Length: 310
Ligand SMILES: [Zn+2]
Image (cartoon, rainbow, N blue to C red; front, side, top):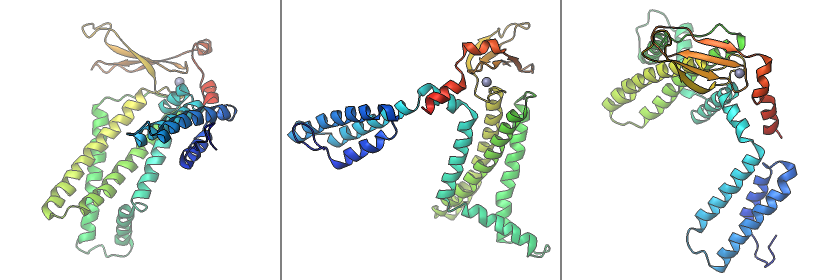
């Protein structure tokens, strides 16, 4: 494959363009491939003539990035992708990806599996009267911060006055899924990541204080923050489609008792509007469901999904 002047495009470039073209929808693929091949050929002719003497690899990398981005956005509609990121599907995929990556990087959660094995051995095989040893100490060292983090998280959620609305099973299932995900990911990060960090600290005191106590403290704080984020995120989701509500508008006045400050948000799919109280008086959030006549004013999810999968 060469241009009119017989200058062949390097094989890796041709292979890359061919691979990237598979991302492009079939009906526009030939045009897309011809356009990017011509662009790369023109650039390669300049390189062959010696007219480009510096930054060749950077320019080639930029051309490849441009082709890949162009192919991606021809396949995936930006608005539909944004809608998907705001929806529950993104949280589920992100959680699964994080857990898979962690499993791959930690040999299948080796440290956690070791702790579980120790606990099982103690329960089934060891006499209960045996004095605590190193294995029991490891269980206590990991178990105490987890219990403390759980208690701290519950207290933070209660102090934060995170009111939840009485909605259907999808709303509550999603909240339970997010809570369980955080309860799995954050302790696993601490257990597996902490063991890996401590393995690289040679100083004993530093390993105990920074790698042990310091990381345990970071874990407790991170766990509490993650639980707070879960409830704050859930509070701002549509109870029908579970998508994050959009277009926040502040109404009311901080000085007014009868018209206190609140934030109003809309569901992008037209399911309703939510009024969140911003004052400390503890007013409940107010959800207003829209009727079917409102749906024509909003883009429907189905049409966006069609664009994604076209
Ligand atoms: Zn909605």
